[in-house]
Amino acid sequence: MTIQRYEPNGKRLSHVLVNNGTVYVTGQVPTDRSQGIEGQTQQLLDRIDHLLSVAGTEKSKILFAQIWLKDIKRDFAKMNAVWEEWVPEDALPARATVEANLAADEILIEIALQATL
Image 1 (tube, rainbow, N blue to C red):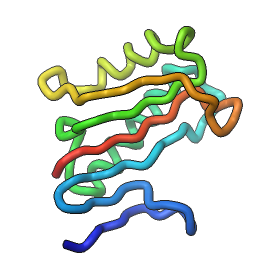
Image 2 (cartoon, one colour):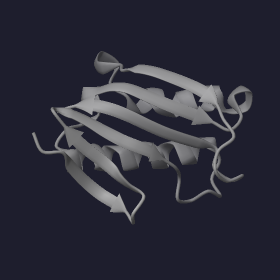
Image 3 (tube, rainbow, N blue to C red):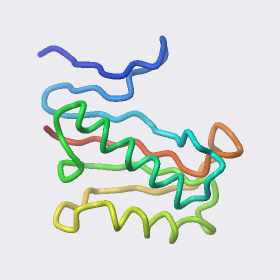
Image 4 (cartoon, helix red, strand yellow):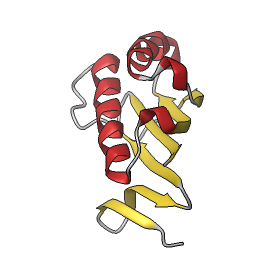
């Protein structure tokens, strides 16, 4: 089976790829980093919707999501409020959320995930 790669970022990575029926979305970070956690989370979820569509799937097919927050105590509940509005209640994925020192001070959240076709 051929690996399908979409939306490459220079020589570093593909934002989404498909292999053997599994879709991998690389860690997504917000482009407008002036927004708070709610805005940054919504940006990422919108981007993930786009990337899943490019790969031929959608959010009800997410298997596992990994979420990194810069400040989990401050932002966990607010991030979850946006997430819960977005994720289908009858298709909840497995998920892990941890606190991490992200690549830039203004990045409050990063999300990566795996889905099925």
